[in-house]
Length: 213
Ligand code: MD6
Ligand code: FE
Image (tube, rainbow, N blue to C red; front, side, top):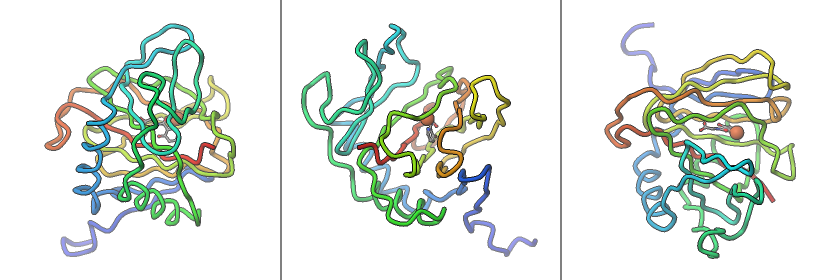
């Protein structure tokens, strides 16, 4: 390939049956995404939630859409209201909905209509231990995950927590579509290394779109 080949054409990679990585898929829309993200965070600032076991999460979270993912002493769940303020979550911005829909389509899921967007913010050292996403109703619906800011190492595991996990860097603009046979795979994020991104500073932000209800 020479310099003038289509190097900025997004690359699609199938990681496992049903798990597809769309490198750079969110880059084209990043200006609108960033602006809309700021508006959501102004309404629901990032906060460190507490697990049912009493641990404060290293990842800070916010939500938009009809449903938001929350955890507190009562458990993990989707809630139509912010348990802290009792108010509904901010509407999901059109730029978010469009991006999630297009990414799902690209990965072979027509008609993906997310009702929940969880926004995760990682600072240096923040991590997400291996888990399955199973608080949603319908596992035939995919999850669309958008990585922004500082690069992180994602772990793609198997169907048991102790199974082998593959490590994979996720860069600013990468989109992971997570569905089909991979929907219930264990996965996580290794502790964030020090890094810098012009728009996100030392942070990584991840948007996960779901059809939760
Ligand atoms: C993260 N992501 O990347 C954490 N879950 O910050 C997830 O836990 C995740 O990326 C389901 C599907 C895709 C994901
Ligand atoms: Fe997850």
